[in-house]
Length: 497
Image 1 (cartoon, rainbow, N blue to C red):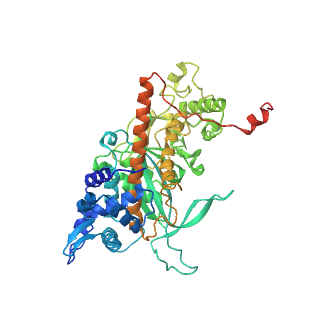
Image 2: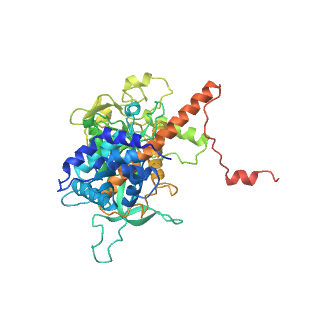
Image 3: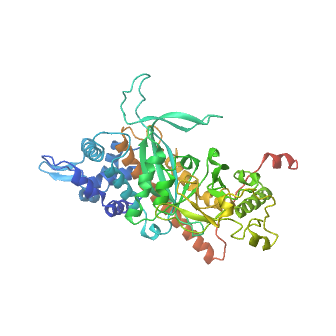
């Protein structure tokens, strides 16, 4: 799909990155013919035409423009000897100056602050104003970004890309959970619709690249926590167990401090009862009554192939578990402390230790054998919960309730972001997509690719909205995708032809 040059120029100008980078470049004896603004436009044009991220492709994209655009962008200039067309060497020279200016003096496998800000500004400028405040929810994920450099030989560390490192990615063979690759981790945050809000286009709003020697979850945290400072509030952060299992100080605490609400899948090692606090059982990010049935605390997430009957039974059990949960009665103070009350005090269960609760209707669960020596959570009206209790596992919805399952289902948008970037029929970011090495060139190219991806998503979005409006005007319901799935059981019981 071709994207007009004018649309790409508007994004570059709205981001304001071209003059910022130009100010960082050295002033030579002779003025450079290729400006940063034109270089970025050429990089985006090459990705819009589904070409590899090669500088020769940038040169081809620029020199293929109409003559008027070439003159306006400086691709063709009038020299003393006559018109001069931009050369590949000039393209390589300007790109080299840009990457040198944006790289760290001592590369360490993480982007510089300037490079991170440039990429953030480019992605933010690719989001139309009508969608900037449409949602604060972000689905996050990371993927592999293999370098073109061959890994160092066994026992050595010398290679063409010293910032790259060995990492793990999903295996491609049968029964292969993971495999090694040499390169970087690319992380992205994709806009998703609010839980009860209207649909929004799934646009990549933030991204970063880090060497595999660094934790990708920790590398993404400063990118996300910087968003409120730029006037973009954080809402729901949808993440899988790879993020949730990180140390609380590395993921959950800084995001929660920035105003985010976590909706994430818990790692199996973090599920179920994990100690007590003043007698209350710590489980799945909440505090529960000491008399909560063990089977309720050990509920696992609903299986993907669960039948409607199994889903209804699972939802009934999680709703029953919520009755035993200690209720939060105050918000977090500036130190992260809050207070919770006994579920019997809040009228959710019947307990002999709380005589007033015994007058509640009998549809509430009843504690038949209360503790012989009541702990603080049973003896006191409320208890204080410090910030370190459930710091890693606390999230917006009870895990694994139906509300959590519906909210977490939006996380697949992050996987769709990288699936489009890895589409073999389009811009496939596998090894060979670019032959440049180093974190700075890869991250700059990936930012341009995600800008183009956002434009493709917007084009498809507007086409769907027009189709919905056309069908509504004709009195037809919105077109939905029909899911056709045949199981082995259905095939086995099917009548012979």
